[in-house]
Length: 233
Image (cartoon, rainbow, N blue to C red; front, side, top):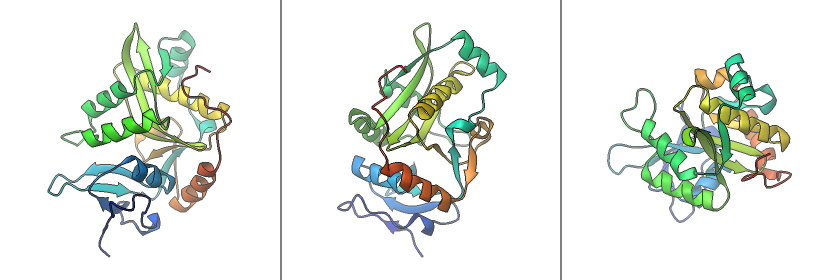
């Protein structure tokens, strides 16, 4: 069965994520848009790359298995524990979302010539940030941004998108802050999307997609105990 090209007039529709190919690819679209992004995350789907060949379609994924970090399973290494104890970094929330995205986009990923974070993605996630849905956590050292992460907060789940560091342990310190928020406010999981050794070292693990989709439905149906973004709990 061929991949479905999504209808721009029906941004909330996606095929059943269980119908993805072996790589997790489930559908294509000509554009993103905030409505489609929100609908995708609620259904366990996310945009990853844009085709290099015309017509440059967006590729939507729902991988199996899924990489999740359950907050209470977060692993703190001795080096990270020292950094946190010494308060080496000043950690802020939503202080400079656009800059975090810009730096993440400038770094890219191993084995990729250019970043998967396209200008359209920066624009639409920026709009979600203005709506109070997309958020960033940042690490500063002497006033300089040295690490950060961003993602979406929907219900009692956080969907991580990308992170970076310019100083050792800076991105891990941001993740530790996110985990603290998740535990305090009862978030079910932090979605890490696809497996990689770095996330595994932090305690993330692979779960079957069916398990993830079941947990996702529950998490998205619940509301967090408070609007915690922008606070320094």
